[in-house]
Length: 330
Image (cartoon, rainbow, N blue to C red):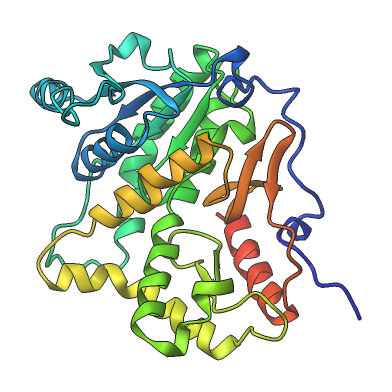
């Protein structure tokens, strides 16, 4: 029986060893508890920050916050440091207001800045692409600053469109004094796509196999691929494409109710995924793969990015190749 291809086969290799790139966040110089900075405290940033405070005390030493709105920083500094669990001595990670000149004095930098989010009712169908031009300009400034300051941590992109902005970070940092290594950049947008697939699988028995062996791949946007099942026997192309459409349109359902869909993305793609990464556990995020920031089930080890090794059905791998090729054109 012919062995199926894997994600790494999209470019014929696994992640390069990390020994040659300054990865303090994983090799840490003996530091397990990570110093985190969150930039951008809008709806997504504030919700993500709350999740890190409540769930991150096993791996986070402290959290710096930064936003152009100084009053917002002050408010979150006061409120988040006033959260305690009654009659328990173990504190949540302390929050402090970060100075611009010390933004990259950390192990993990999380970019949540969003200059322009289309309003509910604006009629914009592809919200992510509408944000790209404005957010690209902002993130390029941060990337160049990280390179000039010889940042040795992890640069996490949460703002949309995630994978395009990851590529922008890599390109812009190359203009700085100490360019970021490709594996210092990761995109956190796929977690909510998995969460939405799980939601529909729980609602409809047609997709229940996703709960056991389903996966999401590609990008947080139109290049998303949802597989109902990654086994050769269980994969159904028609059902997978149907589930993919449901997941892609899920945010429009929230907008139809009159609200911006940011809670699930901030927590499922943001806080929970980031914590999994810091713990070295499996998560759905986008990592560098032959020039493209491609999403799939992976984890970070001291030897590099470990992609899931499960062989994939030919029909599914063909979809991944098509998505990958489109992303190469960005």
